[in-house]
Image 1 (cartoon, helix red, strand yellow):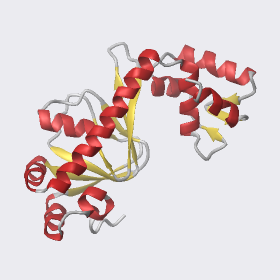
Image 2 (cartoon, helix red, strand yellow; image 1 turned 60 degrees about the vertical axis):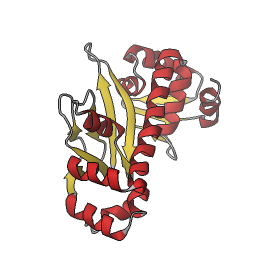
Image 3 (tube, one colour; image 1 turned 90 degrees about the horizontal axis):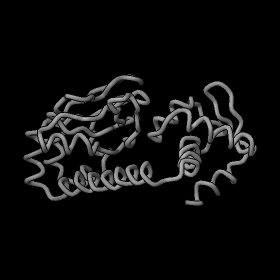
Length: 221
């Protein structure tokens, strides 16, 4: 992919004056990664803000006991709230970002970010609006894990992952990581869904049989 002017990709940067966008294009660098690559990981202190030009990144955290939970995903046209927070605090990541597809990342050095945030209200508002949205998403994850019914959460996540599709390619462990629970819990609920003829399971594949009924479960919280 040839990235001529990456600032056109993002609402906040596209609204900036042309001279500022020119500075951004000169200061930033384009990084391409393959599906499955680690974009960032624990113990690394970010020295750049990044914008996802193309692809999708999964951000997850793993406990000392080895249990993983997916915090959120970064889609094309978005920045990463965790990178923003760690860069501002000059602290290391406590989570991992993995490319779920081939990705193109725009990396903006901290010194350029600091200067632009101080000089341009539009850019600062763009970055912190994205930060606020993701913070709300993270609070929802905490609420779901602490208080949400697992059948409701699983039905909702299956529908999200299978949006527009007839099936979802995921193992029970994959779904457990998505929801921050044990694989055995996911297996029990999926078996119940199958008995009720809402889904059909095979190795690493879940086929929808009654999306309307799953939607009713997802909306029953």
